[in-house]
Image (cartoon, rainbow, N blue to C red; front, side, top):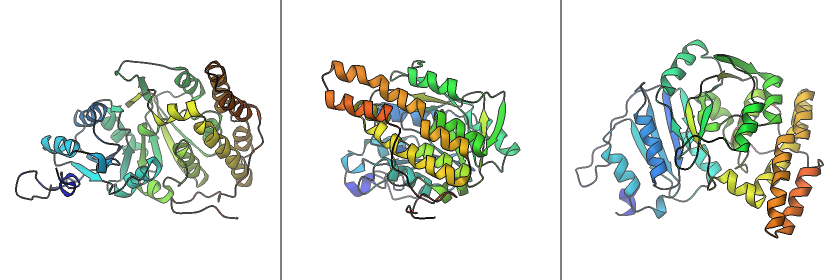
Length: 342
């Protein structure tokens, strides 16, 4: 299929007269930052179609369109659902900028950035809508997640066991904000970005800050909190979050890039929280003990694989708390802001 057809497959009928798809009005947008076609992405889309609440819009934003043979937009078109859009990036943006495009292309009042291998549980949107009616002024909702492996089976790896132990106790619903929530997240980021439902105005104001791939979610949460935002936590999960070795975080953990980015970020946040007058949050950022423990756990396997330089780098990251400071504005910044002095 020619590239121009690939990029407009859901706007123009394939092999038919050009017809622009009608868009339905909905107050929840589900944005999927994808990297080409595949069975897991199709499972994700099918989980959206299976929602008991049908008032939604879906957009798949493909960061591998230049490598595509047209199978993804053709398959989406075959579903014949006017609530869906396919958007192709003319050139690869990378994870951070593709997430930002998801935010920029959203249209509804509330937005989910759903992983291309995760699945919504059937009643997720129905439950979210009930929360919105009661907590419409909250900045975002965190539904929580159950963990599945590459084959879709229930799983609970060590990282997710730690997340579960780090998360605040919730009975039904719980509204949190300010330093209390910041401290909890800095001790161990137990949130799952695909299970978050953001108010669109909040998401667009703060955006995903360039330069962060591993911590782009934590950075967004903290900047929202620093600007006075709040989050509703739900006890019962709304999504199935897929944990597998091919994910960015898993790959980054093996080669050390994840921990280097996290280490620099936590030191930046220690300075930011100090200037914000949140001493407990600053202390949690300086300690970032869950990240450092995760780093240390990787050392034995690296030594066994005779990757001694990588093991030494991991030891330094795990046991050296000193790091660079930053002058990020404490009030939160939009995705286009650069770091500067106060």
